[in-house]
Length: 279
Image (cartoon, rainbow, N blue to C red; front, side, top):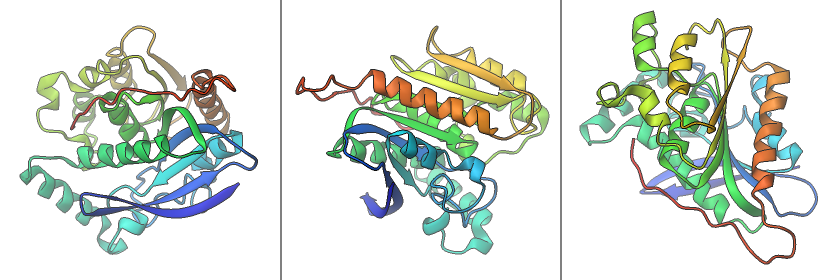
């Protein structure tokens, strides 16, 4: 597997990424892997790539080894997009509040970063067919919102990243500031976002005793998806991605994307819609 560093540019901002390419010759499916939060601002893209941090979070590395071109960005405020690790949480809050004053949100920033990665992969000569996303915790949260906002994303894996604002509030859980999108609760909370997912597939895992994502809130959010769109795997445990479940998730994602690839020799390339949207 080849690991390469690159930087994408958008609206005056730089998005550092890692690109993981399988050995051999393509084309392959394309996947955007999104890192978790875990309060570790000095750690971003390197963890899903398997280069640092928790090896159970190396789902980007796993996807590349299965046969996908994987692009892993640093979300705003993490790793190479972090000015000072000592003020990571404060910097995240300041940026979230600043974006609110500009009429945007931190969730929108994250979703736009993923859309940029999807655009880049869509033009990569070794990538064919639609694009998938995978993420845990914050990464799962962003994968969920990204799929709802971008119809080019054919399939999404959301690991311990889905719930409802109502359930967080009831349980006294304070999440990362990107979750708090103005007007979201009045618009129908996360089930209303789930209802935007159309002609896409979503695989969701949730720990039965996850203290950050109460299981009833997870079930309420999943109920918002259109019939046949999402499947939920509830495991005995808390906030994590057990190895067996990770293997199931990555295998599922590659399988869905492989089903959508053009047949060899047909000279076609998948073309998907892009639904503009801002969270």
